[in-house]
Image 1: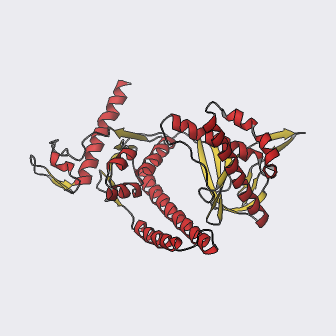
Image 2 (image 1 turned 135 degrees about the vertical axis):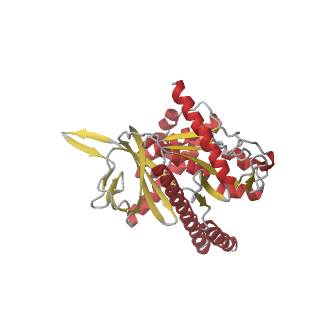
Image 3 (image 1 turned 90 degrees about the horizontal axis):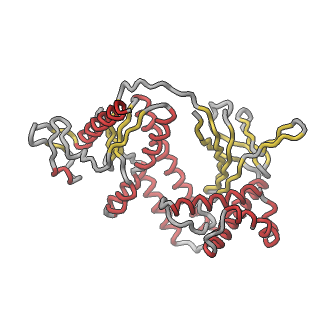
Length: 381
């Protein structure tokens, strides 16, 4: 099975390479904003029409010739992807890019053969920890110290500039061997706010305390930033500190979610969860609950479960989002509508008398519903 996988490395460019990276990011942003402005004036303009406009921009902006031309075309394709998502109602209308916010550019892999020699614009040597990129040539990298080489076809590379640090992400098309699954174990998962994940086996993964730690730090830095003169050295210094704090928070969340998902998939063949509509939950929630839903990173966990189950030939079942998993008794099936109140943390069944923790009861019901769906699908096919 062919899958797309990304490898992210820390990039250590020289002073000249840093200047070229920052210049390429600025040029990509300029082309993106110019084409977005033209697209607003002429909605019929296609991505290929916009690419034809690039040679005209060279006459007006001579410095565009100094950077990787492929990165300018990729900026146009990124704009087209954003517009397609908007037309499909998967996101808002693209906005103009600003300096200092998501500073990055992308370049595609190109391979040519000339006089029996193969030329590649993107090459990676993990033994010597060196990457070759268009215009930048060779640069040092760090990461994946246990990996000897990357097997697969390189598709593109994305270079990011975050808080005075540089990163490069290599997107690779890889062949993953098909793994046989016996479907011998099943687990139900209930996602919540107090506990990030509660399984039908009674295992609970709580929301980590590092969120409060980083929130306090970011709040203090933002207060300091508000007292600085905009554009001054101290202002830029505090801005970089805030970016670094957000980066650490993002990495901590990513690591936590990766550990939880890997543990669940490793121990089970069938994973059952709810088909949650996170955006709707955020809209209807009050301001305190909304913040907790965003911090819980439910959508990221579901995303990881989906692609990891596909890679490892595991079965992921998502039950109907309107299934009343918290109201139904996992022992006798009685429905208790009092449990609609999320403040009630223990399920007490008035019919059979069972007392069980609310989230565990919900995860067991989700597991049962998933098993029913699994066998229905199996025998219908």
